[in-house]
Amino acid sequence: MSKDSVSNFIENILIILSNLPSGLRTPIIKKRLKEFNDFGQIEKKEIINNILKNYGKIERPKILNLFDSWLNALSEMDISSINSIFNSYLMELYLHPNELKDFDNSFILSMFKLLEDLPENKRDKLWNCFIESLLNTPDPKKFIKLIPSSNITNNLD
Image 1 (cartoon, rainbow, N blue to C red):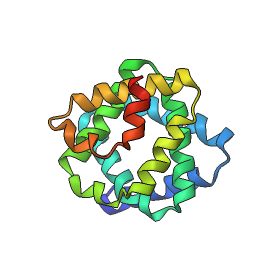
Image 2 (cartoon, rainbow, N blue to C red):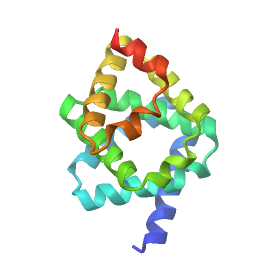
Image 3 (tube, helix red, strand yellow):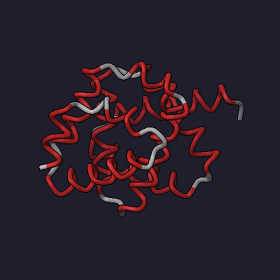
């Protein structure tokens, strides 16, 4: 499969998933996350880069629905799997900082709002894994400055 056809494939998957109701979307995402951890680094990088390249082609409310399902599915995984997934994404964002330019403040706030709205046990588990993964990047400050200050303060209490 060529890089363009892989990119189109990922785009189509994102569009299809974004149009599904949460009850159907979340189990599919959960299965894909488990599969993701079994892939090698090269495959993970390709998947992440294609997701980052294509997420902007989906309407903002639908991408947030996908992100919500992703968070819920992720929260049901074991901590080492969550850390591995977060680390994979953060390292790709670190290596390709231009991908962060499309993450405007309102989008980031919307993403953190979804995290805040999770039940406390899920939210705390994901937050702790995220911070651990973030601190394991070569330049954590690059990402920390993107986190709304209220989230840092609220989650340190």
